[in-house]
Image (cartoon, rainbow over the protein chains, first blue to last red):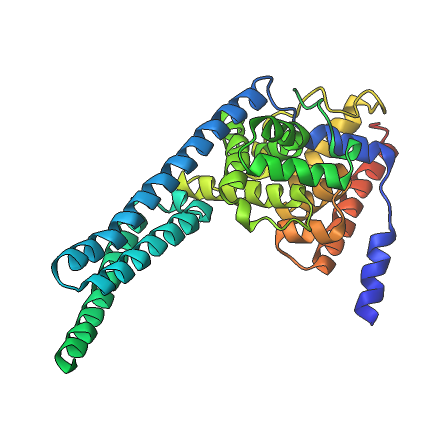
Length: 142
Length: 194
């Protein structure tokens, strides 16, 4: 309570006009004439890069998801599960693409991009393997 | 363009919010308006840490970083404290990266002779020199608190957000900073310097 009172007291004292004006003149700097133009130029580059990265990430994600599913679909499974795998693959691609578009990946760099690509590939490959085993067991049981 | 564009005070909060949303969605015109509105305080902040071209480059990067990290901006808060926080952190990072020591105000660039209030309230050259000299002696926290609160007009809460210290500390710094400057002015007046 006492501390609050002290803080309140501290905030009550004002500032002299001369002092304020001098303070402003000492600490305010006016940007150069071409500041705005240069900043907007850099902004446009950043927007393009942002979009470029999003597209690149979308393509990478699409490849990482669709490649193992594609090969698995072609080589190993029956017609019904082919359709299911294709649907899962398509949904995954769409979801990843949307997530990528809204993410902040551009500043994360190539390392993160590659790591994500590899991680997604491994996870999907493992899922496919589990799925394949399940299908095989079902086939054997059937 | 040169710090004389539209100011935040001339727009309603809704207009500012719309403009920020448009800028962060990639609209160059809205981004230009955002820069025009806040370039002066952001540039000033950078000039207090860096010099000339470095300060200008840092100030421009502040706006680009704001765009890149737009999802971290909370729409229910003011954009200026957020921009100033980015500016402060960016300048400190650059100083560390260049392995320079964080410059005190003694190394600050020359202030602009066309400060916005220069015409409104004439201050003698002696007063200006004296205040300039005294500001250089102030600890960084007191100086930043004084500038952000009294010059940029940020409330205590926003100053505390920018400086990363509790509100009570901001008030204490303001109190001490003002006292130091006022005492210096009074001493000079007594000596007849002013």
